[in-house]
Image (cartoon, rainbow, N blue to C red; front, top):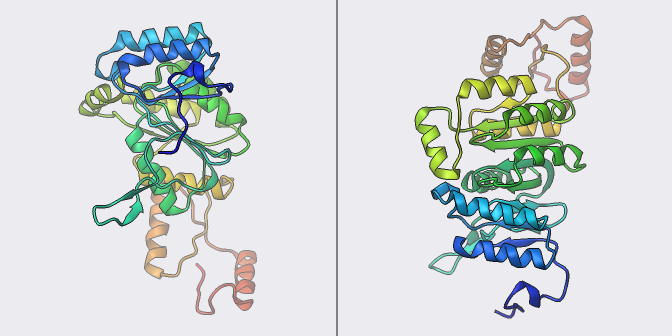
Length: 312
């Protein structure tokens, strides 16, 4: 295919910053050994077939081997990372694909540069989210698929994103949290500076079983997670759409200073329903007083609001 390849890591003349491992699970331990001798300090293990299918001991050996050489690991059983500002893209899914009639179509589009970071325990959910972001025009800073998170986990990545100048909003798709106390400790600090929004799966008993078979996650009791998120100031989304609605809101405007809101709408009925829902959710829609009415009237005279608009 016109690309220079090497029979092993030792044959590469240059220093290596990052290894992306895609060999069968039984060969990964040997690759880690080679990386250690080559003094490579970072690896992303795309390969599946570890604790998520019961190969717990193999996963432990790989992590122990990596630690002995000072190698940090993302994965295994992940789809990789994408950092739009640096251009690093280790996602194994191609951007486009060729159909049987030879038409080229988008397969796994990447979002453009932006300020929303996404950490996902599920590769499938993560790539679907990237597709959604690309379609909705939501800019991405970093996408990190953590898979089984045998070494680097979401807590470490949240700490990294706290200092990242390209990240304003942190999104999480989680199936479990291994160290709840550490998560609350770190998230409590980060949420004072940047919003963290999480979509936590495995809420039901059936969902917990599915999570265990997916990424070897022990999903835990949902009420405990709910309490931990509240204590840490983490906002919980119920589905992908809500996750990105919240992301757009926080990425494009500062947080509201209180619970008093005004509603501008081009449909009267929609305005009434929005007002009802706002009050049901605990917000206040105060009556517009003289000074505000005068400002709105000025906007109407300047043509910034339609002449036919009314205020309540």
